[in-house]
Amino acid sequence: MEFEKDLYIVDTDTGVDDAIALLQAVAAKKKNQIELLCITAVNGNCSCEDAVRNICRVLDTVNVHDVPLYRGATQPLVVPYTHEKPYHGEDGFNDVKFDTEPDMSRVKDEHAWNMISELSKQYPNRITLVAIGPLTNIALAMKLDPGLPTRLKEIFIMGGNTEGIGNVTASAEFNFCADPEAASIVLQLTSCPTYIAGWELCFKYTKLTRQWRDQVLGTIDKPAAVLAQQLEMVWFNDYPWGDHWIICDQLAMTAALNRSSIKKSSPYNAQVVIGDSLARGMMVLDQRVLRYKANNVIVIEELDEEVVKEQMLIAFNQ
Image (cartoon, rainbow, N blue to C red):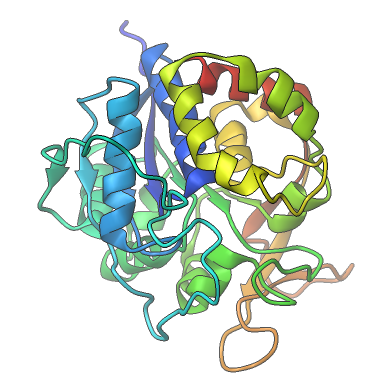
């Protein structure tokens, strides 16, 4: 019997950490470990169009030309999000200047949310959806196709927070803060296993050092590593995190590609604060002993850092 590969869709707002997460997925595809059905773009770190262009640049860099791309939402569902100071630059790639333009011919006309729905019908209960940007596309897909959550195998989300620690506001993580209504809808409607790699996992509980990043990954002379170095060097010239190399989307991708990397996780009922308040975009976990709502997420609390390092080495060596 022919072996059925795991099927993946990646939804991304293609900033710098998204690019490295995409390199992880592409490396797994090259090793014939997964089938990457498509990549969908969403507004977030940059405009949707810049996100599409950045995806194409990543794929060109590692000579992958057979993965279709689809444009998604160009703005949040309800309230426009304004960057005070875009952490990934205006274009998502830290405004690095490149000598060439990426091949955009692989971008298809269909909307991202429609393709997520259609592919789930074609491959019911087989698709792992990795969402590493604001959840606008996913929320639209679930609202337009109420059966979608029952047809997905699982969802891995980089977003939200578990201890009230924010990164773009005092109380909210960027992906959820950029479209809280979308995040709220997805957590309300999801019915498949839904894993959350929150900001605290990145900021507090995964400790990769800049020294390791520089002395190991920084010495790799491969196209993927060169691209990552170009993109991250803008941060490294004035890095606010000391010796802690903070990675975010890469952690959700690591967990999605290698479940054994999850050393500790717990189920919770999670909601997202919407409306106009200081807590807008914050994810709230019901941590009471007696809970009155069913658990809807699995929060990843600890990852095997050696597996994370291995994933980074594989991603950079392309």
